[in-house]
Image (cartoon, rainbow over all chains, first blue to last red; front, side, top):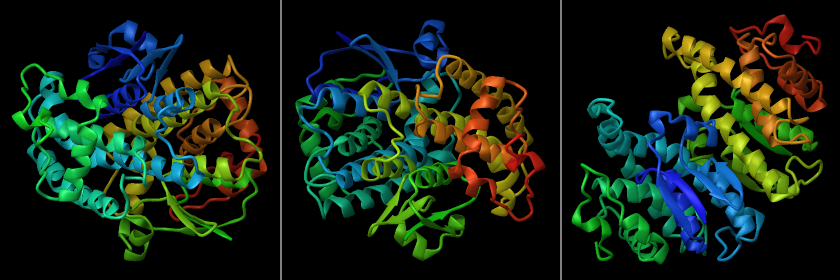
Length: 221
Length: 221
């Protein structure tokens, strides 16, 4: 069986978990405290970070590269469009969330509030938290703008772009940092993706010392 | 004709420039001072960063998504392997350089020494410069380890992974931050890629206030 080394609130790990589950690939989850620099783990991934996926005799890292490999080797159901322009738009949006959204929002909120405590790196920086709380509004508005024009973020079918976005938002929702009243369009999109069977394992996550709010796993949030 | 909005020392822009040139796609270069937040530019790319490529009636951003689109629409010469495992390895290494190498090395050296001055954001932080100078050694050793086992970084043919790595190293070489004596293997690899016609425009770059060292454009460096 495949094995994924992960941490529960990492948006990069959650994107890979969603992709594996949507494609119905059975996978054992192994929590990896990568910041403790376990030598066995560094042998598996010289980059020293999660996710790391062991599958079909391979050991793979880098979430975007993993998801493209899964899409090529387990093509059903498709999470990438058939046309090149559609694939470009998916890749652009995956990079938007994993790069821009991550540095402006996720790293400023989840990392400050949760990772710092778990990794024993001190207290949240309030300037960062404020900046993240401000930036997420702009990103939710951008998502609403896209979703007013398309059924899913990158077009008319659900793709890796939706999983990338949902991975970040679900990690933020675990610490109540998403204002679902800001946009009905975005809330409807999240309700659709949250109710998929692939989402179940993510809604069952528990981080010791950080119990999720009641609405986190509720499909009628 | 295609048009690329760029800044000369950006490794992300350089990767796209190398890909365009290798595929013999004619392209006009337009320098874009993106940090001045020109509204016209923000209309072209809501992410507010370079590179932005206008081509065949499209406006595209995010360097990795652009390069994959170019590879799919201008397949000759191929810069991605035909097999899925080979493509995974290219994508893993592109992410290695554009994410890990960028945050540990390029952002600590090129951004501190050059971008801060050009963007009028103060003086280089000596702690960052020292940390970047230390980290590049480990990365050069990792490249040497790969190149002792393969002709090119991701395998037996030249790919986008080589262009990603060369884009970062060439920006660092412009400010003399690469110790070419550290590894003959890496130096030989860079000599091979530097002598390609696709590299010419990059070797002709000039940043006002930062003249390149004599060895920068020299093919026998």
